[in-house]
Image (cartoon, rainbow, N blue to C red; front, side):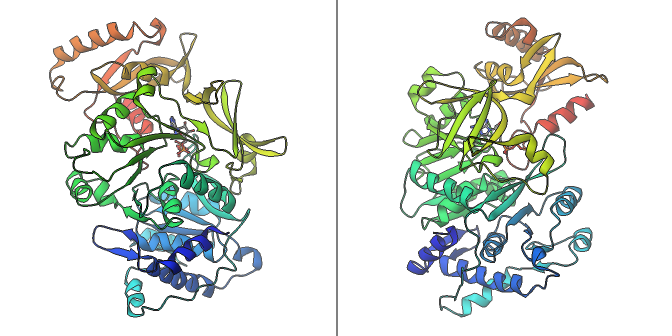
Length: 509
Ligand SMILES: Nc1ncnc2c1ncn2[C@@H]1O[C@H](COP(=O)(O)OP(=O)(O)OP(=O)(O)O)[C@@H](O)[C@H]1O
């Protein structure tokens, strides 16, 4: 059954059930289908020069809101893949994605500045006002899913930044997405009338953890706007006035929430599970979370965009926390095999995406096949235990040579985070003009109130103590040469620690 058919079935059975909640308004499954069919009609009215053009993906430029979500689904309904681009994406990056994807249809759901208006001269604009047209009729909309994507048709193309800075579009098929969705619906807690947090931008593949499991099980997406995620006061107002059962975010985002004393089980008794992906879940974050929410289940999941969301998961228990300094990333989902080849995690099977859109060269570098099955080089170092538990050991491209020694930067970070006074640490190499590493710089967020940022002598004393402590667990040649203390580590728009911003900071020092 197509994913959209599953969503339609739920909508027909429970049209008045709430499917999506924003701060100001909620929407029902009937409105979801109504809005999809309204946008699909607009797409169908577009004239194409030839049949090939007609099949090209649709770029959707908008915020995390109901009209953007329904535009994405309408694209799939009319047989197109969608390319989600967040409305806050800088113009140049948007232009790069627009030209790399060679799209002919663009849907915009947010207000556009003049330069964007010019770039998207030929666009379908969808505004929130159209929803009001639907409210007039209470009849269930007629909808035809004959043209909807299925099988190996592409569902979406998500552009990741890529190490070169030129965006690469990961092309994910309907069946990739169905495999992920089925796994999510079976391997985690099954909650009736699930209220699922939808916080990740649609342009980040963490968003599929919320969208598809929720829509295919009759859940409600509790959607946080950018205004809410970037404003502490608004964020906690919203969180404290909303019921959430399933939490999905990066570990860095939950770290922010844990800063507020209101983020505890007493105030959120319905929050039953936390699912993390996208970056390393540290022992510290997991411990704090289990202290704040002792009855909740915490899952660490792992996967790159190229393998559709996540491919492994494990519940983080007190027992695991006791026995590990670096948490495992779990057991592979049933239709995926993980092998470690030359220290690198290789993912094989149904989750592996189709490749990089319109980029055969880059596709050939990372995608290959093993015994007729699709396989992907993750670029992550890892190991597997005899019982199949997967361990992550950092990005291979985060390995550097310093004074002749091969050093894993994330290994230093993990050891620093073991130290009680350190919340989070990021270690970056400093290069000279010959691209040789000349120093290792550690950016450190300490526990609150350890010392005043202006108190240089307290800072020096702490650095000395820190080095002494660290020298018990890391080799001399791994010791960072410089320690920079920050009140907060910057996050990128996907809610992961922004290493690029830190590197720029370092260059400016
Ligand atoms: N549970 C986890 N623990 C440790 N690392 C993780 C975990 N989940 C994901 N990752 C890291 O995130 C990577 C996948 O992230 P994603 O697909 O978003 O691309 P990215 O490389 O971070 O982003 P971009 O290419 O846009 O810079 C994985 O390859 C892995 O390095």
